[in-house]
Structures are given as C-alpha cells and as structure tokens.
Length: 212
Ligand SMILES: [Zn+2]
Ligand SMILES: [Zn+2]
Image 1 (cartoon, protein in one colour):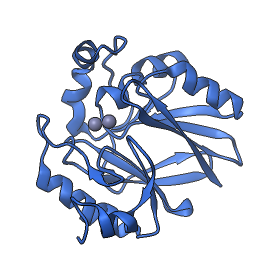
Image 2 (spheres, rainbow, N blue to C red):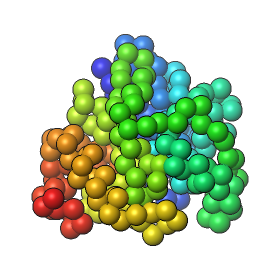
Image 3 (cartoon, rainbow, N blue to C red):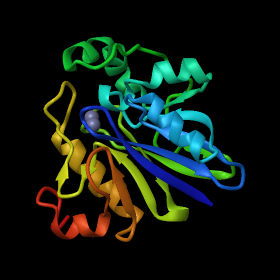
Image 4 (cartoon, rainbow, N blue to C red):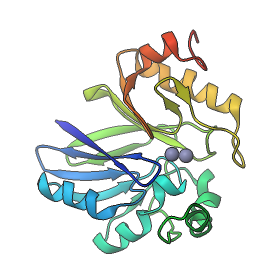
C-alpha cells in the first residue's frame, strides 16, 4: 500500500510530501523546496529509505533543495517536464531574490511527460502534464489511494498564479478541467500550499473553476 505524509517547508509553507510503499519501505520525496534536515529526519523516523526526488515544477519553494538533496543522498531527480528548464536554470537567481539559501541548478535524471508512470517500491503513480502555472508543471496521481499531488495547479478555493513568464491562464483552466477532473470527484488532492480538498468539492465551490 502507498502512504504519504506532508511537511510544509520554506517561508512559503510549501507542502513537501514523502510517499512510500509499506511493503518495501522505499520512498520518494515530492518537491523538497528546502528544510532538508526536517524532511530527512521525518523519513528516518518512519524507516523510509529515500530512492528518488519527484518534482511538480521548478519554482524555488518546490525545487530549491532538490539539487543539494540529490547530491547528498545520490538520488535521481525525476521531473518536471522539460518546459520548466528555464526555471531550473534560474534557481540560483530565484533563491537570491526571495532570500532563500543558495539553490543550485541541476539537470533532472529523467524528464516527465503526460501519461508516464513513476514507481516507488511496488507502487506506481501516473503522471499528467498540467501546464499553465508553469509550462513544465506535472502532477502525480495515485488512483489506488484516490490521491493526487498537484503542486500549484489547484488549491482549496483557488488556482495557481499565471502571471509568471510563460504562465497561461486558459492552459491552467484546461489542465484542471481536462486532466484533474477526470481523476474523479472523490479524489483528494494535496496542493502545493494550504489544506487538502477533493476535486468534487472544488467543482462545486471553487470560484475560479466551480461549475466546470
Ligand atoms: Zn509555483
Ligand atoms: Zn508553490
């Protein structure tokens, strides 16, 4: 069975998630934006052996710690989609601009594409490409536990910003309605910031995408 535990990190309270397979205790960390010692301590406390870093997109609060963690633990960096290359290249400047510890750029071990799968232990998650907030944004869907890790695509009661370079409002709306909604109303999503919600609840009441 697949498990997860979310740890808000960085001054932006970004929801970094540990996901792991309880048969093998192999785990992946989604979006290690910073505070790596807290993430590693939580993994150790639960007996999780980290095997990979998965990225939804390359904004500093999500990807700022990826290069350092990958180097220290010899982990592959999987994702995001190559549309976010320019954000990865800009990580050192992003960290300086927002007063984060110096972040290093990196080359992902594997870029992700719509329809790909990623594995942790004996569990598989599905990848959907959801551009709009950033061009290379991906989400990780775990149908076996009806969960989706959606980064900054959708929030409880809100949607991702699209006023960044290569952000696109219509693309974001299409990503939400064509790629998230089909995962099912009962699917609970873990957003990049703030509390969990379900797609059904957002379809009913989200002021930006309700009724779609
Ligand atoms: Zn973002
Ligand atoms: Zn974010």
